[in-house]
Image (cartoon, rainbow, N blue to C red; front, side, top):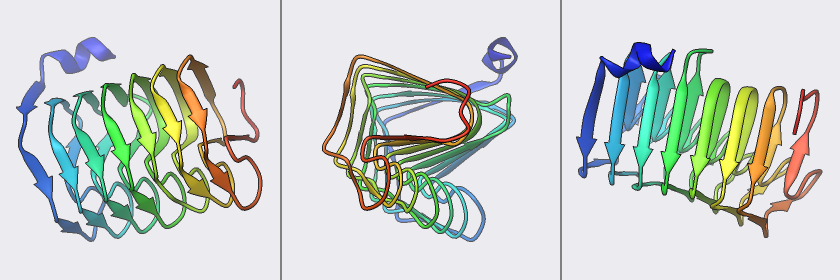
Length: 193
C-alpha cells in the first residue's frame, strides 16, 4: 500500500500549525486518503473535540522527520496524533510528542489500525486515562530506539495495547506513572507484545 501513496505525497518543511480548534477530528493537520511528508514542523496548542488534537491521519501515509507535536488536546483519542484505517502508515524519525492530553485514550498517540514505526522518537509527558504515551487499538507498532517516558495514565501510562502487535527494539521506557495497572506497558487481548 505504501507505493499507492508515493505518487500523491506532498511535502511540508518547517512552519507551524499552532493554536487551532476543530469540532471534528484533527485541529492542527488532517491527512486523509493521501500522503504527507513533514520535516521539522511545530504542531502545538491545538484542540479537537474528538480525535487528533494535533494531527489526524485516516487511510493515509505520514512521513514525519524531526519536529515537535506538543501541548495539543483531544476530547476523546490521540491528543498529539490519532490515526485510523487499515491502510494508514506513520513513519516518524526523530520526532517529539510531548505534553499532549486526551480525554479517553492515547495522550501522545492513538492508533486504530494501520502500521506505525517510531524511530529515535520521544514520547514524553503525555496524559490520558488509558495509554498516556501511546495506545494501540489495532494494527502494528514498532518502536526502534528513542524514549517513552514520564507519561501518566490510570492504565498503561507508557504504552497500552488493546489488540494488535507492538515491538520495542532498544530505546528507553522509563518513569511512566499509572495510578492503576501498567506503569510502563499494559497489554490486553493482544496478538503479540
